[in-house]
Length: 121
Image (cartoon, rainbow, N blue to C red):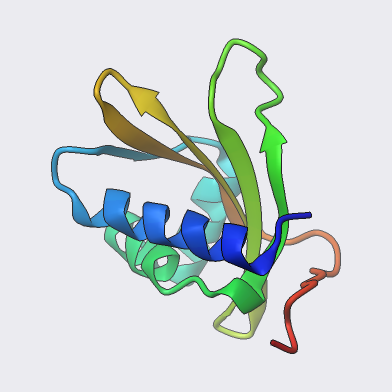
């Protein structure tokens, strides 16, 4: 589990990447993500806005290594309540040449209860 300061640092990096038009940002095309976006009436810009608004209290776990050992960078997990539904969010930040890049691996309805170690902060 990351410290509060590590989570804050990650969120600062995330927001910097999301604000920089030169940085690559993608949402992984997975059926579960697509279904969630459709049900919420969301497009990528809406997902981007939700990611920008993430807080320390929504942190769940990380950093961990990407399950694909060929990929550098760390994976962080968050959860968010949107339209009265729990959303599971998994993010991967890595270097793409000289720039940071972001892949939102998961942005979908959670299939289990979300646990927030810093929820009461």
